[in-house]
Length: 224
Ligand code: URA
Image 1 (tube, rainbow, N blue to C red):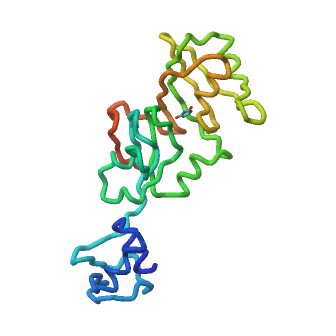
Image 2: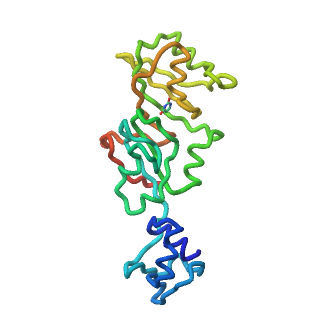
Image 3: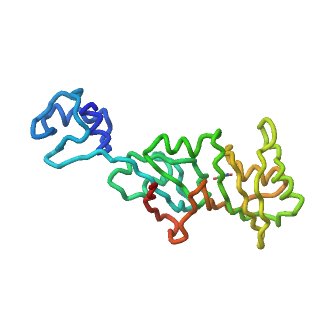
């Protein structure tokens, strides 16, 4: 791979800023000073920047217990992002797998493996996602049936796909959907005349939010 790409991916330094370090002679590859940014190197080579070894991140998979009030983005001019919660040397390589609204809490997956995130979030894969919704009014059996069968969302063609719905005490409901339309859960409850007051994601596919993780905490996932 190109040396400038290697330095950028290993350190998070934007690609546009990397040339000044390479041309300035601050990068050594297997002991040799390389000053041409486009030089191709073996990704397993020993690369030093300012005398310190830098390495490619490898694949990272993690789950975060997203708190309310942070946005599911890696950059945002106005709000705190979920990435700011991840203390990891290669956090700059991560992206979010399926966003949550700013006020939604619960399971958020992050990775730097684009194939993995695509398999989870691409609509055609229909990966189920389970949410605990706290509602303004008790969910009736008729309302639950309507959600199970599919409802018409404002501005969408056709009904939502069949959902699993469980009525819980204290104006709560558990709902599992296999689509990911914008604000889908809130809009589904709105379509039956209810309102979501709080929303918490419990599960995405095989991944269940670890109950040991407090809001704002995260852990690496082992995919083996
Ligand atoms: N549906 C919503 O309405 N909001 C979310 O954050 C996730 C699903």
